[in-house]
Length: 480
Ligand code: AMP
Ligand code: ZN
Image (cartoon, rainbow, N blue to C red; front, top):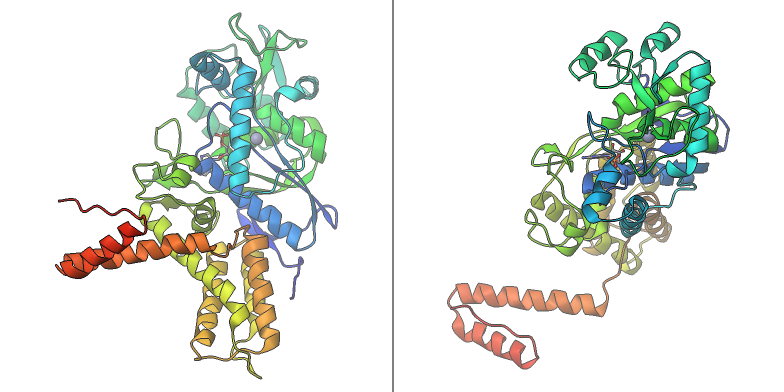
């Protein structure tokens, strides 16, 4: 198999172009991905982003890199839009729990969901609350470099002063004037010099439970700061990949860059990768607009939009049908089609062992494998990889039906490479049907045949099937 890590290209949001991936160290990569805010259950949209970075991690690993993968847990300081309400604190009041109980509960839930999707655990999963000293240290550096100021116990990032030395908004392609105009629409509720400045430290109100001592006040850090402080601690001032959903580009990631440039004088990451949104009914999946699906609802078949349950494997396969930078809309039909498609691949995979071998092969395996790698190297193009996989599936069925020939060497190559692309890289599980699963499928088939006969008013046969099934303990009752 011609594995090559020389040709991998990523679309870098920073330069808005596809670039050859050149790691800082030849074989060891640092990757930071913004993790969840653990104030309630993650929705399927959040999962899409984590699934996409799992795939990127798996592919980098496959082509030979050693990776330190840091994905944080935001457990403090994520404020409700334009207010001082901490999302976690708000949830603690609703559920009558300690804030840290909320954090623990939803972190556990998050991990369970990630496990159901078979995602690789990050190397380090730091929490914001566990890194308050590092964040305070970073604020002190920003103040001493002249890009932040303290007012009444809170500290704000001074965008005007920063913009004299650096270019703010380079990721989201905004300039300071755009940001100033956007910020004018917001009320200037705080002690900020200018509405566009953002909080690095907030003095806590008396009622606020999650607060820490600092040189400025008893308070808590601003949300953008944790990722800068924790990525620096675990990956250094400059690392390879920084990822997250496209909705984090601005302001979160532009603020991260500003914080790092004012302390370390560098943009922290060489490649900024952003995943596009999972949508439901054409709109971004989001808790705040009440337009979301919880993963467990899909696994249990307990959601009004879906007629049946779908396994984590199928949901994941569905997500790969679109490129990670394209929007993807979820629907019952799309999941049904994905299930059908995946089952076909799975069936072909288990058929390979039983294929009759000939002296020659009608399929060029090496060029097929090269095409698969080319598509993965092209910014992890999963829709094209899946099209490649269906090409080989078609060939396997043709050999099975004696329309094509396969030789012994190709048989082994195809089996191994399908396992590599589907199981190892895409992280999907092939499962051989157990006799129990087959029994269930067979019963469904007999029931289906019976319904067809019944619709044709062939009552003699349909009643016979019903009675025979009933006598086997499989109850069928006809609704009048
Ligand atoms: P949050 O917990 O809101 O900080 O989100 C965690 C991650 O999920 C972030 O990287 C978001 O960009 C991402 N995310 C949020 N909504 C969606 C969505 N609808 N589709 C894909 N990713 C999303
Ligand atoms: Zn972040």
